[in-house]
Length: 442
Ligand code: SF4
Ligand code: SF4
Image (cartoon, rainbow, N blue to C red; front, side, top):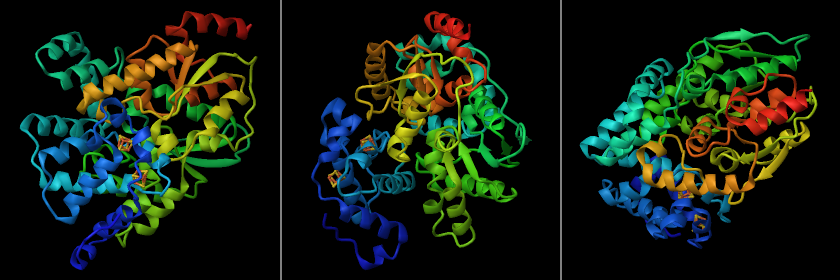
């Protein structure tokens, strides 16, 4: 694609990077075939190619974002399916991240939108605050239908997504020693939402790792990866959160890897090197952290895991989170691990399509998110699996809100099959699975 940035504009490294990306696009339109928002409504401006044109026009003319540009960019899930499909290697993620920053700087959203975004930014990256918000949401949940009827659709979406039950305390910084002779040492990014909503995910991670002689360290000072604010275009806050994590990981003695159990966070941590490329104090350390970052299944795939009990033989519908399959290009490992440990892995048709979770998307764009969830749940339920597995808490929460089939993190099944406890959700929600489990357990 031809561009017409001036030399003065190209002196800005962010513009120079985006220009490189834009020039790689040959506007063939292949990406439209796998874009969830284009698939739903068929509007070119809600396709990757359409968004690329909008971004090009906005950046080239150095224009403030208009309401129309914000609308179509906001509707983008950042699922990155377009990057997997693109034959020209267009790095849409960096382009749309740049555009979101430009929109945040130049466009004033309506008051309600600004307030909602502010609430999300002030609550979700902070586990203690998020925990209190979840406790409060228990009282509000019965009013979700009322909120929907009176037009507070985003509040309704938030209340519906807040799971019933306890909100947990996040894991404190500590070291979990390896059981037996230590053969490895890893750092764990506990994640901000992960631990409060589903502490069993990190518990399973620590359990399977320590049982396989790996020491697990949760560093002091580690916090939100920054993706939540990054996807809202709040670049300075995202970079501050990234720097805090880089400092926290940097203060540790050597580790073999930095493990992440929420693939949305993993994609961002793996991008720290790029995000901080222009910061002379952090660039090198950021690249080092990104180089060490691994999804939990990526790391486990290299360990000699063995099934520790009779293979449960449950049918698992494996939902490949967009951030894992498109953002990190990890597709094989989770399924191979599950199959190796005795599960019957069922591929979900239209597996490239997002479930509608996408960070805070299911709150900010509840209608599109609901339609995508219904489509995803429909394809999953037709498979009649015993359990759904995914590698991202956002997807697990989103899908679980639309089906009775229990949804767990892949690592929980891996831990269970190698001698850890059965995921609690499996026992509670799925009599058929629980029955098969007790048969398998003997
Ligand atoms: S597939 Fe790639 S090259 Fe073709 S229009 Fe989409 S982004 Fe551009
Ligand atoms: S990131 Fe996803 S929603 Fe956004 S343009 Fe690409 S395919 Fe479409």
